[in-house]
Amino acid sequence: MAAPWEDVLRDEPAIQEAASVAVDAALLEGVLMRTEGEPNASDVVNYAPFTLLPSAVPSVLFEQAYAVQQDFNLLVDAISQNKEFLEDTLASTIKVDDFTAQLFRIHVQVLEEGLAQSVFLGINRSDYMFDCGVDGTPALKQIEINTIAASFGGLTSRTAAVHGQVLKMLGKSKEASRLLPNNPSKGLALGIAKAWELYGSQSAVVMFLVEEVQRNIFDQRCVENELWNRNIRVIRKRFRDVFEKGSLDDAKRLYMDGQEVAVVYYREGYVPKNYDQQNWEARLLLERSRAVKCPDIATQLAGTKKVQQELSRPGTLERLLPGRAEAVTRIRATFAGLYSLDVGEEGDKIAAMAIADPDQFVLKPQREGGGNNLYGEELRQVLEKIRDSPERTSYILMDKIKPQPTINYLLRAHSPLQVSECISELGIFGVYVRQGKEMVMNKAAGHLLRTKAIEHADGGVAAGVAVLDTPYLV
Ligand code: ADP
Ligand code: MG
Image (cartoon, rainbow, N blue to C red; front, side):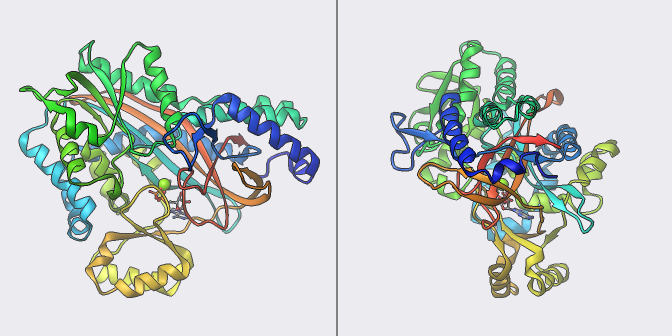
């Protein structure tokens, strides 16, 4: 599945020139990030890392990923409404993982009080790699689904234009014209706008809940500006601001500084380091409110690795999506092998299997944001140490996906231009809105291709490992 520009990759002067054109094009198109040195200042910015050339993606797998996205939207939404399933699935995890336990406590408290929220908005991104089978045929395998703060929908809306220009200057105009248009930021904004409209208060605002350190602000601004263009007011606040200035009225309407909030869009709150005691209190306040949370806490829990693993058990998908046999088949086709490490005979066997052959697996804790998984020798050592301890249950085990590497150049500010062997990860954005029991929107909203050098087992764009890419369908 090579792209038709192998010839160009060896032409060093052409590559050098293309790289400088590419960087300027990225800056012009707004593929931007704040710098590590000044992460909260917009007067010093640079381009977000990206590949010099688009990467080949098999069109059948690309279409398969789009075709299953609405099914995944339904599945996530069904899990979020299934109290028993979440309770049973996370029971072993919350005994050993404090972060998941704290999220779960808020989930239970909000349910006990009775949900004030009646409009639900999900924005997720289902990520895949192309597993290379023994006969060399690639298969679409899900890495994970992100149900909170799924990012890069904004910047990726602008990378195809950059890659188009690079291809043109390298004499590949025909190929450039085949790059697909892609605008997740618009799709995300349409979901937020729909939720805002259904909330039903013209004067209410959309609140982006943002991190203290906001290097990736331009990605968020892409979505934000789509909302302003629709005359929807957006405010940006941190947990700290919510703690200090957030309040609920008698009807549990959420106010910030006296301004009613219709939608809370989280770009924060997915890792333990986002929380101190005050931030947990702020999170609870938001969850208790009538405002549309994207995601609500149940939907965040639906995106945990433990839930992903339980979904792969025979019969689970059928139970969660009754009467939707075709959706179940499409979803299951994307699953890699996933294994529980819960205490007991099954978990003992799985642990022994992974210790015996660690290169076939990935060991995953209940964390997001990249850089947390264990591989190879490290996997073996850690699992050996915890194999007889309940700590084991804070992890899940997954078959390692092995894609066929390709050659590309990764452009990163202040780094030398150098050819790399790379693998790619395709993400599809899903957006849905539910009012009470009725789904009023369910869409695939665009894609994201991220590529990294093979020497890195793990880590996304924000973690400084992967870079933005554009799929070239083959
Ligand atoms: P996170 O929530 O930290 O993003 P992921 O499950 O997406 O966790 O794993 C992070 C990265 O690790 C992925 O982007 C991918 O590069 C790599 N990875 C995860 N699972 C696998 C797997 N089963 N096989 C190969 N690589 C994997
Ligand atoms: Mg991931």
